Each structure stands twice: as structure tokens, then as C-alpha cells.
Image: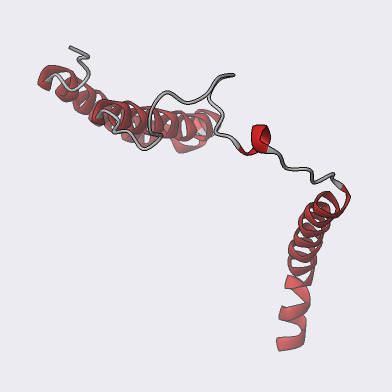
Length: 122
């Protein structure tokens, strides 16, 4: 029984090993075959075609992170909506109401952020 169970997972193990081998071999081939001629121009910091003006470790406004988190949140919402739309006929009214509650909570959270002024750039 143990041998049969391990045999069922062998294709997954083989897939992982082949994927790792392809990744490692391609990186190794690039490292071995690519020309390596560093000079001052190649080793200098690069920022949009010209030298950096300031230190690269400057502080970012926290609003950028807030917008990024909101983007991820609503992106995940779409990831939940697609499978829900596919199986809507099978899950019936319960699934419909559950998704309405989910979307309602997201809308309430978005309105809260908006009213608190977290999305203002002034």
C-alpha cells in the first residue's frame, strides 16, 4: 500500500525535479556562456537612462503602500468572482447571498477608507 501511494506521487516529484533542473541548467549556461567584461559604466547605478540624483534609500509615502494593498485586495476579489460566476447555477441562492455579503463587506471597507481620507493625495 505504501509503495502504491508513493507511486502516485512520483509524477509530481518528477515534474518538480525536471523544472528545477531546467531552471538550474539555464542559469548555469547563461553564467558560463555569457561574456563577462565589467567596466565602470556597467557597474554604475542606473536610473531611467541617467545617473541617480539622490540616495536610492529614500523614504516612500505610506499612501503608495495603501494603494498597493487596496489593489491586491480588489485583485483577489476578482479572483473569487470568476469561479463563483462559473458555478453560480450549482450553488444557488446561498452562494449568491454569500457573494453579496462578501462584496458588501468590501464596499463598506472601501467607503470607510474613502471617508477617513486615506485615499487623498493632498
